[in-house]
Structures are given as structure tokens and as C-alpha cells.
Image (cartoon, rainbow, N blue to C red; front, side):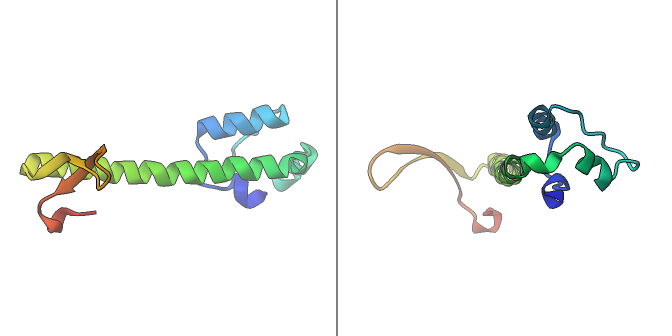
Length: 106
């Protein structure tokens, strides 16, 4: 559970969810100790806190992927070498981003 709370992907919204779950604010400072967490009986919410931490990690991964797509779009747009709408093999249209120069693929 300590690893879950030390997850660097936890954002303010995740901390708010954890604090709402335990019904208390968690001070984030150097004077805060493991003993403080034990006093709060935070261990009773171990599974839910781990779920929130996992969600935060997954969101961070998705945000990084989105940043790559945005970067690639900007790069391709500036270079004038991208196609944005391509048909799939099934004939449905999907939004894709292809750069005609493999040097810029991500």
C-alpha cells in the first residue's frame, strides 16, 4: 500500500479520491510518517487505494501516448506529409495518422 501511495502518477484528483475514501486529509510533507498512516487506519482501504494507484498509472501511460500522437501530428503537419483519414480493411473510416516519412514514426 505504501508503494501505491508513493506512485508518482498520482495527481490531485487521485489524492482527492483517496482522501474522500478514508474520510480524512493526508498531509503531504516531510513530517508525515508511516505512523501517521497507521493512526489513520488507512490499511482498511488497501485494495481501493491500490486500484486508484493503478488507475493513475494507466492514465499516465495514456497521457504519454496522447502526447506522442500530438507531437507526431504537429511534426507531420509542419512537414506537410500526413494523411489523417484512411479507410480500414473493413471499409469503415477511422482517424489515423500516417506520416509518409518513416523517419518520423513513433
